[in-house]
Image (cartoon, rainbow, N blue to C red):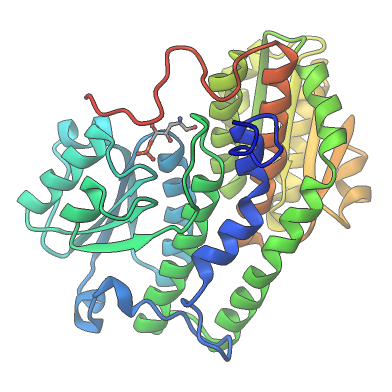
Length: 370
Ligand code: AGP
Protein backbone atom coordinates (compact mmCIF):
# COMPACT_ATOMS: atom_id res chain seq x y z
CA UNK A 1 0.00 0.00 0.00
CA UNK A 2 2.84 2.41 0.84
CA UNK A 3 4.33 1.59 -2.57
CA UNK A 4 1.06 2.51 -4.28
CA UNK A 5 1.19 5.81 -2.49
CA UNK A 6 4.77 6.34 -3.69
CA UNK A 7 5.95 7.19 -0.19
CA UNK A 8 3.16 9.67 0.54
CA UNK A 9 0.94 9.17 3.60
CA UNK A 10 -2.26 9.43 1.57
CA UNK A 11 -3.43 9.14 -2.00
CA UNK A 12 -4.69 12.70 -1.80
CA UNK A 13 -1.25 14.07 -0.98
CA UNK A 14 0.31 11.95 -3.72
CA UNK A 15 -2.26 13.22 -6.22
CA UNK A 16 -1.72 16.83 -5.15
CA UNK A 17 1.97 16.35 -5.87
CA UNK A 18 1.26 14.73 -9.23
CA UNK A 19 -0.30 17.92 -10.57
CA UNK A 20 2.77 19.32 -12.34
CA UNK A 21 2.99 16.04 -14.26
CA UNK A 22 -0.76 16.01 -14.92
CA UNK A 23 -0.53 19.54 -16.40
CA UNK A 24 2.24 18.42 -18.76
CA UNK A 25 0.41 15.23 -19.71
CA UNK A 26 -2.84 17.06 -20.45
CA UNK A 27 -1.00 19.55 -22.67
CA UNK A 28 1.25 17.00 -24.38
CA UNK A 29 0.72 16.73 -28.14
CA UNK A 30 -1.98 19.42 -28.07
CA UNK A 31 0.18 22.48 -28.65
CA UNK A 32 2.04 22.96 -31.93
CA UNK A 33 5.84 22.67 -31.70
CA UNK A 34 6.27 26.36 -32.46
CA UNK A 35 4.02 27.23 -29.50
CA UNK A 36 1.66 29.20 -31.72
CA UNK A 37 -1.50 27.13 -31.67
CA UNK A 38 -3.59 24.44 -30.02
CA UNK A 39 -4.15 21.30 -32.06
CA UNK A 40 -7.24 19.34 -31.05
CA UNK A 41 -8.09 17.47 -34.22
CA UNK A 42 -8.50 14.41 -31.97
CA UNK A 43 -11.92 15.62 -30.77
CA UNK A 44 -13.29 15.46 -34.30
CA UNK A 45 -15.07 18.81 -34.33
CA UNK A 46 -15.03 20.41 -37.77
CA UNK A 47 -14.48 24.13 -38.31
CA UNK A 48 -18.07 24.32 -39.62
CA UNK A 49 -19.36 22.72 -36.44
CA UNK A 50 -17.36 25.16 -34.31
CA UNK A 51 -18.56 28.14 -36.32
CA UNK A 52 -22.13 26.97 -35.86
CA UNK A 53 -22.03 27.01 -32.04
CA UNK A 54 -24.34 29.74 -30.72
CA UNK A 55 -24.36 28.77 -27.06
CA UNK A 56 -22.46 26.50 -24.71
CA UNK A 57 -23.88 24.74 -21.66
CA UNK A 58 -21.43 23.24 -19.18
CA UNK A 59 -22.94 20.53 -17.00
CA UNK A 60 -21.22 18.58 -14.21
CA UNK A 61 -21.28 17.76 -10.49
CA UNK A 62 -19.16 18.82 -7.52
CA UNK A 63 -15.58 19.59 -8.27
CA UNK A 64 -16.06 18.98 -11.99
CA UNK A 65 -18.80 21.64 -11.89
CA UNK A 66 -16.36 24.03 -10.26
CA UNK A 67 -13.93 23.42 -13.13
CA UNK A 68 -16.88 24.27 -15.40
CA UNK A 69 -17.33 27.63 -13.66
CA UNK A 70 -13.79 28.53 -14.67
CA UNK A 71 -14.48 27.00 -18.09
CA UNK A 72 -17.33 29.47 -18.59
CA UNK A 73 -15.03 32.43 -18.08
CA UNK A 74 -12.38 30.90 -20.36
CA UNK A 75 -14.79 30.27 -23.25
CA UNK A 76 -16.64 33.57 -22.93
CA UNK A 77 -13.42 35.60 -22.70
CA UNK A 78 -11.59 33.83 -25.52
CA UNK A 79 -14.31 32.67 -27.90
CA UNK A 80 -17.04 35.21 -27.09
CA UNK A 81 -19.74 32.52 -27.07
CA UNK A 82 -22.32 32.74 -24.25
CA UNK A 83 -21.94 29.96 -21.69
CA UNK A 84 -24.40 28.65 -19.09
CA UNK A 85 -23.31 26.40 -16.25
CA UNK A 86 -25.51 23.91 -14.41
CA UNK A 87 -25.04 21.26 -11.80
CA UNK A 88 -26.17 18.09 -13.53
CA UNK A 89 -28.85 17.22 -10.96
CA UNK A 90 -30.62 20.51 -11.75
CA UNK A 91 -30.09 20.71 -15.49
CA UNK A 92 -32.80 18.40 -16.76
CA UNK A 93 -35.44 19.65 -14.37
CA UNK A 94 -35.21 23.33 -15.27
CA UNK A 95 -36.30 22.59 -18.83
CA UNK A 96 -33.14 24.09 -20.31
CA UNK A 97 -33.25 25.54 -23.80
CA UNK A 98 -31.21 23.03 -25.78
CA UNK A 99 -31.00 23.63 -29.51
CA UNK A 100 -29.00 21.92 -32.27
CA UNK A 101 -26.60 24.88 -32.26
CA UNK A 102 -25.90 24.41 -28.54
CA UNK A 103 -22.67 22.68 -27.57
CA UNK A 104 -23.10 20.88 -24.27
CA UNK A 105 -19.87 20.19 -22.40
CA UNK A 106 -20.10 17.54 -19.69
CA UNK A 107 -17.19 17.34 -17.27
CA UNK A 108 -16.57 14.19 -15.26
CA UNK A 109 -13.43 12.67 -13.80
CA UNK A 110 -14.90 9.18 -13.63
CA UNK A 111 -17.18 9.46 -16.63
CA UNK A 112 -19.72 7.43 -14.64
CA UNK A 113 -21.62 10.03 -12.61
CA UNK A 114 -25.32 9.23 -13.06
CA UNK A 115 -26.63 12.81 -13.15
CA UNK A 116 -23.96 13.89 -15.62
CA UNK A 117 -24.69 10.93 -17.87
CA UNK A 118 -28.41 11.69 -17.75
CA UNK A 119 -27.71 15.32 -18.71
CA UNK A 120 -25.60 14.15 -21.65
CA UNK A 121 -28.47 11.96 -22.88
CA UNK A 122 -30.99 14.76 -22.44
CA UNK A 123 -28.78 17.10 -24.48
CA UNK A 124 -28.43 14.59 -27.29
CA UNK A 125 -32.17 13.86 -27.28
CA UNK A 126 -32.69 17.55 -27.98
CA UNK A 127 -30.30 17.54 -30.89
CA UNK A 128 -27.27 19.17 -29.24
CA UNK A 129 -23.78 17.84 -29.69
CA UNK A 130 -21.92 16.85 -26.56
CA UNK A 131 -18.24 17.25 -25.75
CA UNK A 132 -17.06 15.19 -22.79
CA UNK A 133 -14.09 16.30 -20.73
CA UNK A 134 -13.24 13.18 -18.77
CA UNK A 135 -10.31 11.39 -17.21
CA UNK A 136 -11.39 7.85 -18.02
CA UNK A 137 -10.99 6.51 -21.54
CA UNK A 138 -13.85 4.13 -22.31
CA UNK A 139 -16.09 5.44 -19.49
CA UNK A 140 -19.84 5.72 -20.14
CA UNK A 141 -19.60 9.48 -20.68
CA UNK A 142 -16.64 9.05 -23.06
CA UNK A 143 -18.47 6.36 -25.04
CA UNK A 144 -21.73 8.24 -25.43
CA UNK A 145 -20.45 11.77 -26.11
CA UNK A 146 -20.03 13.02 -29.68
CA UNK A 147 -16.60 14.48 -28.95
CA UNK A 148 -14.14 13.53 -26.22
CA UNK A 149 -11.27 15.45 -24.64
CA UNK A 150 -9.36 13.24 -22.24
CA UNK A 151 -7.64 14.85 -19.25
CA UNK A 152 -4.55 12.74 -18.82
CA UNK A 153 -4.40 13.13 -15.03
CA UNK A 154 -3.85 9.42 -14.41
CA UNK A 155 -5.94 7.38 -11.94
CA UNK A 156 -7.37 9.41 -9.07
CA UNK A 157 -7.99 7.30 -5.96
CA UNK A 158 -8.70 9.80 -3.16
CA UNK A 159 -12.37 10.76 -2.89
CA UNK A 160 -11.36 14.42 -2.80
CA UNK A 161 -10.56 15.39 -6.35
CA UNK A 162 -7.38 17.39 -6.92
CA UNK A 163 -5.38 16.57 -10.03
CA UNK A 164 -8.56 15.71 -11.94
CA UNK A 165 -9.86 19.24 -11.28
CA UNK A 166 -6.70 21.00 -12.36
CA UNK A 167 -6.34 18.87 -15.49
CA UNK A 168 -9.96 19.80 -16.33
CA UNK A 169 -8.88 23.43 -16.10
CA UNK A 170 -6.02 22.73 -18.52
CA UNK A 171 -8.47 21.00 -20.87
CA UNK A 172 -10.72 24.09 -20.77
CA UNK A 173 -7.78 26.41 -21.53
CA UNK A 174 -6.82 24.27 -24.50
CA UNK A 175 -10.37 24.00 -25.78
CA UNK A 176 -11.04 27.72 -25.26
CA UNK A 177 -7.96 28.67 -27.24
CA UNK A 178 -8.85 26.13 -29.93
CA UNK A 179 -12.35 27.61 -30.30
CA UNK A 180 -10.98 31.14 -30.32
CA UNK A 181 -8.39 30.35 -32.99
CA UNK A 182 -11.00 28.72 -35.19
CA UNK A 183 -13.39 31.63 -34.73
CA UNK A 184 -10.71 34.32 -35.01
CA UNK A 185 -11.75 35.92 -31.72
CA UNK A 186 -8.22 36.31 -30.30
CA UNK A 187 -5.04 37.88 -31.58
CA UNK A 188 -2.12 35.57 -32.24
CA UNK A 189 -0.04 37.49 -29.69
CA UNK A 190 -2.54 36.68 -26.95
CA UNK A 191 -2.52 32.97 -27.84
CA UNK A 192 1.27 32.87 -27.89
CA UNK A 193 1.34 34.58 -24.50
CA UNK A 194 -1.24 32.18 -23.01
CA UNK A 195 0.53 29.08 -24.28
CA UNK A 196 3.90 30.31 -23.02
CA UNK A 197 2.37 31.03 -19.61
CA UNK A 198 0.72 27.60 -19.54
CA UNK A 199 4.15 26.05 -20.04
CA UNK A 200 5.30 27.74 -16.84
CA UNK A 201 2.44 26.38 -14.74
CA UNK A 202 4.01 23.03 -13.75
CA UNK A 203 7.09 24.72 -12.26
CA UNK A 204 4.95 27.35 -10.60
CA UNK A 205 2.80 24.65 -8.99
CA UNK A 206 5.98 22.90 -7.86
CA UNK A 207 7.06 26.05 -6.05
CA UNK A 208 3.73 26.20 -4.18
CA UNK A 209 4.09 22.55 -3.16
CA UNK A 210 7.48 23.40 -1.68
CA UNK A 211 5.76 25.74 0.74
CA UNK A 212 3.53 23.03 2.22
CA UNK A 213 4.91 23.54 5.74
CA UNK A 214 3.44 27.05 5.95
CA UNK A 215 0.06 25.81 4.74
CA UNK A 216 0.12 23.03 7.32
CA UNK A 217 0.39 25.68 10.04
CA UNK A 218 -2.47 27.65 8.52
CA UNK A 219 -4.57 24.48 8.36
CA UNK A 220 -3.88 23.63 11.98
CA UNK A 221 -5.17 26.97 13.15
CA UNK A 222 -8.21 26.75 10.85
CA UNK A 223 -9.00 23.29 12.21
CA UNK A 224 -9.79 24.87 15.58
CA UNK A 225 -12.78 26.69 14.07
CA UNK A 226 -16.30 25.53 13.28
CA UNK A 227 -16.99 27.98 10.47
CA UNK A 228 -15.09 29.94 7.92
CA UNK A 229 -15.45 31.81 4.66
CA UNK A 230 -13.77 31.81 1.30
CA UNK A 231 -14.21 34.98 -0.74
CA UNK A 232 -13.14 36.15 -4.18
CA UNK A 233 -14.33 37.80 -7.37
CA UNK A 234 -14.45 36.45 -10.90
CA UNK A 235 -12.38 33.28 -11.32
CA UNK A 236 -11.24 33.76 -7.72
CA UNK A 237 -14.86 33.18 -6.69
CA UNK A 238 -14.96 29.97 -8.73
CA UNK A 239 -11.80 28.76 -6.99
CA UNK A 240 -13.22 29.83 -3.61
CA UNK A 241 -16.16 27.47 -4.23
CA UNK A 242 -13.80 24.60 -4.94
CA UNK A 243 -11.71 25.41 -1.85
CA UNK A 244 -14.82 25.40 0.31
CA UNK A 245 -16.08 22.06 -1.03
CA UNK A 246 -12.65 20.46 -0.56
CA UNK A 247 -12.44 21.60 3.04
CA UNK A 248 -15.99 20.45 3.83
CA UNK A 249 -15.67 17.01 2.38
CA UNK A 250 -12.51 15.93 4.14
CA UNK A 251 -12.31 18.08 7.30
CA UNK A 252 -16.10 18.27 7.99
CA UNK A 253 -15.56 21.93 8.92
CA UNK A 254 -18.33 24.16 7.68
CA UNK A 255 -17.42 26.88 5.26
CA UNK A 256 -19.10 29.03 2.70
CA UNK A 257 -17.75 30.49 -0.48
CA UNK A 258 -19.01 33.94 -1.28
CA UNK A 259 -18.60 36.37 -4.12
CA UNK A 260 -16.70 39.05 -2.22
CA UNK A 261 -19.06 41.85 -3.26
CA UNK A 262 -22.15 39.91 -2.22
CA UNK A 263 -21.25 39.60 1.47
CA UNK A 264 -22.85 42.84 2.49
CA UNK A 265 -26.19 41.64 1.15
CA UNK A 266 -26.70 39.41 4.15
CA UNK A 267 -23.83 37.09 4.96
CA UNK A 268 -21.73 39.82 6.54
CA UNK A 269 -24.00 39.35 9.58
CA UNK A 270 -22.22 36.06 10.23
CA UNK A 271 -18.78 37.61 10.49
CA UNK A 272 -17.74 37.73 14.13
CA UNK A 273 -14.59 38.11 16.09
CA UNK A 274 -11.84 35.67 15.11
CA UNK A 275 -13.62 33.94 12.24
CA UNK A 276 -11.15 32.88 9.53
CA UNK A 277 -11.69 34.30 6.05
CA UNK A 278 -9.61 33.06 3.15
CA UNK A 279 -9.57 35.76 0.48
CA UNK A 280 -8.37 35.04 -3.04
CA UNK A 281 -6.91 38.17 -4.56
CA UNK A 282 -5.29 37.27 -7.87
CA UNK A 283 -7.18 39.45 -10.36
CA UNK A 284 -5.35 42.73 -10.60
CA UNK A 285 -8.22 44.64 -12.20
CA UNK A 286 -10.38 43.69 -9.21
CA UNK A 287 -7.82 44.32 -6.44
CA UNK A 288 -9.31 47.53 -5.24
CA UNK A 289 -12.83 46.11 -5.01
CA UNK A 290 -11.79 42.92 -3.26
CA UNK A 291 -9.56 44.80 -0.83
CA UNK A 292 -12.50 46.94 0.17
CA UNK A 293 -14.51 43.75 0.87
CA UNK A 294 -11.61 42.49 2.97
CA UNK A 295 -11.78 45.71 4.99
CA UNK A 296 -15.48 45.05 5.61
CA UNK A 297 -14.81 41.64 7.18
CA UNK A 298 -11.73 42.80 9.06
CA UNK A 299 -13.71 45.64 10.59
CA UNK A 300 -15.98 42.95 12.08
CA UNK A 301 -13.09 41.02 13.57
CA UNK A 302 -12.35 38.42 10.86
CA UNK A 303 -8.86 36.98 10.62
CA UNK A 304 -7.99 37.19 6.94
CA UNK A 305 -5.58 34.97 5.02
CA UNK A 306 -4.94 36.49 1.61
CA UNK A 307 -3.89 34.32 -1.29
CA UNK A 308 -2.34 36.74 -3.74
CA UNK A 309 0.22 37.06 -6.49
CA UNK A 310 3.88 37.35 -5.63
CA UNK A 311 4.75 40.99 -6.13
CA UNK A 312 1.47 42.23 -4.68
CA UNK A 313 2.66 41.80 -1.08
CA UNK A 314 2.70 45.52 -0.38
CA UNK A 315 -0.61 46.26 -2.04
CA UNK A 316 -2.53 43.28 -0.65
CA UNK A 317 -0.35 42.56 2.39
CA UNK A 318 -1.37 45.65 4.29
CA UNK A 319 -5.05 44.71 4.12
CA UNK A 320 -4.78 41.13 5.41
CA UNK A 321 -3.53 39.42 8.56
CA UNK A 322 -1.51 36.79 6.75
CA UNK A 323 -0.49 36.51 3.14
CA UNK A 324 0.36 33.46 1.09
CA UNK A 325 2.01 34.52 -2.15
CA UNK A 326 1.61 32.41 -5.26
CA UNK A 327 3.65 32.73 -8.45
CA UNK A 328 2.18 35.25 -10.82
CA UNK A 329 0.65 34.12 -14.08
CA UNK A 330 -1.88 35.59 -16.51
CA UNK A 331 -5.15 36.45 -14.71
CA UNK A 332 -7.14 33.85 -16.68
CA UNK A 333 -4.69 31.09 -15.71
CA UNK A 334 -4.51 31.88 -12.00
CA UNK A 335 -7.02 29.17 -10.90
CA UNK A 336 -4.47 26.54 -11.98
CA UNK A 337 -2.16 27.88 -9.26
CA UNK A 338 -4.41 29.44 -6.62
CA UNK A 339 -6.33 26.22 -5.94
CA UNK A 340 -3.14 24.39 -4.88
CA UNK A 341 -2.77 26.10 -1.47
CA UNK A 342 -6.48 25.46 -0.83
CA UNK A 343 -6.04 21.74 -1.55
CA UNK A 344 -3.12 21.60 0.88
CA UNK A 345 -5.00 23.53 3.57
CA UNK A 346 -7.88 21.04 3.28
CA UNK A 347 -5.54 18.08 3.42
CA UNK A 348 -3.73 19.29 6.53
CA UNK A 349 -6.97 20.39 8.21
CA UNK A 350 -8.38 16.90 7.69
CA UNK A 351 -5.25 15.40 9.25
CA UNK A 352 -5.38 17.86 12.14
CA UNK A 353 -8.92 16.78 13.09
CA UNK A 354 -7.99 13.11 12.69
CA UNK A 355 -10.19 12.20 9.73
CA UNK A 356 -9.69 9.47 7.17
CA UNK A 357 -8.39 11.80 4.45
CA UNK A 358 -8.79 9.48 1.47
CA UNK A 359 -12.18 8.06 2.48
CA UNK A 360 -14.34 10.74 4.06
CA UNK A 361 -17.59 9.70 5.70
CA UNK A 362 -20.81 9.45 3.66
CA UNK A 363 -19.07 9.92 0.31
CA UNK A 364 -18.23 7.72 -2.68
CA UNK A 365 -15.59 8.41 -5.30
CA UNK A 366 -18.07 8.12 -8.09
CA UNK A 367 -21.79 8.74 -7.61
CA UNK A 368 -23.60 6.31 -9.90
CA UNK A 369 -27.08 6.89 -8.47
CA UNK A 370 -29.25 9.94 -9.08
C1 AGP B 1 -14.73 16.08 -5.39
O1 AGP B 1 -13.78 16.24 -4.44
C2 AGP B 1 -15.90 15.27 -5.05
N1 AGP B 1 -15.57 14.06 -4.42
C3 AGP B 1 -17.04 15.26 -6.04
O2 AGP B 1 -17.59 16.54 -5.97
C4 AGP B 1 -16.83 14.90 -7.52
O3 AGP B 1 -16.07 15.88 -8.14
C5 AGP B 1 -18.19 14.71 -8.20
O4 AGP B 1 -18.88 13.65 -7.59
C6 AGP B 1 -18.10 14.50 -9.69
O5 AGP B 1 -17.45 13.31 -10.01
P1 AGP B 1 -17.02 13.01 -11.50
O6 AGP B 1 -16.04 14.06 -11.89
O7 AGP B 1 -16.41 11.65 -11.47
O8 AGP B 1 -18.24 13.08 -12.35
